View 1 (cartoon, rainbow over the protein chains, first blue to last red):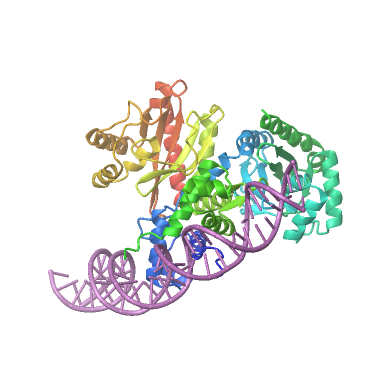
View 2: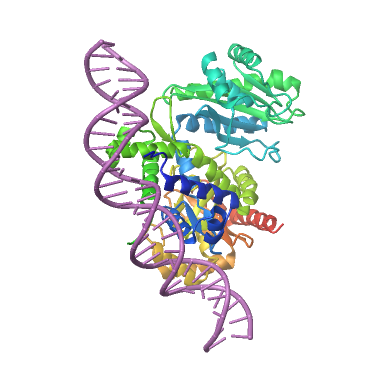
Length: 254
Length: 254
DNA sequence: CACCAATTCCGAGAATTTCGAATTTTATCA
DNA sequence: TGATAAAATTCGAAATTCTCGGAATTGGTG
């Protein structure tokens, strides 16, 4: 018969993801939510507890445990790109006072591996920005820097896969202009995001390639237009970001 | 029959954990490693890939995906204690130049939720310190600050559960002295770890209680004895750490 | 084109998962 | 305290899923 994905595994994962959303829940609440027999939910909950994916708090409610935090950080440290870039991202954020981040490509999407806020960043307008979040490569400065390292055919396959839906009114939504921009990025060595992803956010990205990991990544500096005015956005900062990119690239090759 | 933990789930988790250790592996390598039929391993690998726990890189090797990083960070942000303490931890690290961290209690163990390195911290001697790692509560400064918030009976149950195995030659390994130390911590308001957990590391911890989350946590400042000399370790820094603890505690209560 | 390896397909047998119901534990209130 | 209700856990048979060897297919390489 059609075997397909293992059902109990998929089910368990749905429970975990739901529990992240709910923050905390009792077995009954979960059973109701999934319209499953209580006893079955107990089996799942108990198993998830023994393998440490979830944990029961003193109030008797279950929460997703710190296991994910631990594994996530282990995974991240497995990337040379992370260990090398981490201190530089931090220095870039300190030096500029703005937001600096590191992105890698995973399954044709961008994944934010690391981020640092400089002291000018009061509260991230974009509260949806945290390590592990994914975004389409054409939407961010680091993403575009990554995309530009691919050849046109690969770029096409990426945009075919995920589309070019606009995020703001400035988002580039046509393949032609995007490919032209990619060529420009290759020539000058850095990518710009002028409020194309988030209103009120400008970013400058440069690519980083790790031969050993078969990985392409990118770093970016983000800040609001009032601080990243035209002078800094187009003139002062791009070389700074590039310099940090070069440092990381150099350290990657030992 | 004895139902026990769901086997396929436990198995899947073992695969994930092994893959974290191996960093990357092919299906065959995994099958060999677990001594499982190739076709069965394919079912697991494919399922784990569809639920996004692992991902196949361009080299055809599987790795644990960024899913864990994402969920880990979501979970962390669900804690009021984290969102409130995060910026203060950071300021504490900046102000002192040393290592600052936030710990919570989970299943009678300490879990490091957040950490910041000040500019004096070149490379963490202790490379085993990263968000999500667990440690026994009696071994660290934040851990002891947490432990001291419990009553003696609870403390006893914690030490019964995990023992008092020494980590360095200075570790306190007897319940009696430990309970006395707890009383001292309650009185003066902060906990000290004088190379009891890691050789060459001194720490100062203070407790933080979140009524809303039913949670007890603690923050700590860590540094080497040459910088945290007796004057700073016993005199200058404890009030500083306490001050940050008070700020966090205050912000927790709005 | 032939080879080898990687991946997918397949179906029967085995084993686990599932679920309702029964049992135990915990909480609530008179 | 005892009675009652609610929640949590256990149980075992029924059914579905998982397992696994082997066959079939795909993909890459010389």
